[in-house]
Image 1: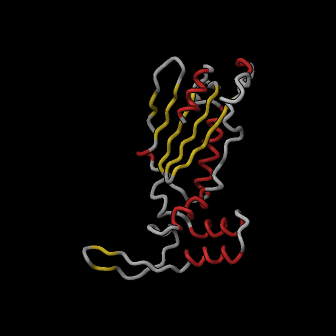
Image 2: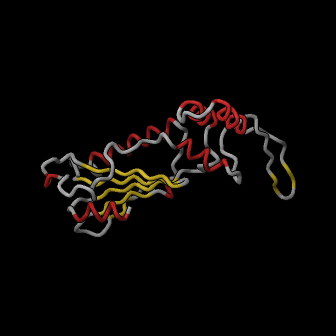
Image 3: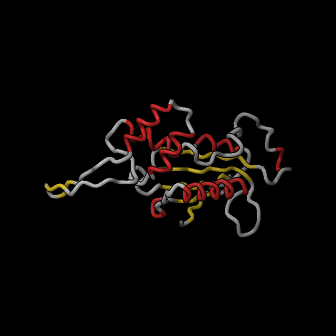
Length: 191
């Protein structure tokens, strides 16, 4: 992220960033969506897919509170925490999240920005780390009343649609939107 921001600012471009926290990420993975992705997105052997699905389906759990266990129940969401497969299953779940349409090439081709001739040009980066997601875009702001460049707004919109379709809820209290401009200190925008 630092390299992306630094390279953009060397070219005089502002960078727009949205840092999001997925609320209860590992607890809220919707099993039917994850199982669909396991069977259809990874080209895995069918027996392995069935094994992963069986690991999730009809899994009974109990909650211990004040030394007493609850009645067993079967969750329809979440990946088993404390298991080796939990983080892997979560990564499989988010693997189809929207990707930037242009890869980060700000540092590989210094003439790519054509000295501002293309006002809609932008470079985007979408990073996931566990339950955090950071969307970065470098490009010139377009339009009055709009925050960020077009590439930033497009990627945020695609991510929002994807999150809604996958029953992912963002914790607004732990999320932040910022602009890094070459000539001004970073600006914090309230969610």
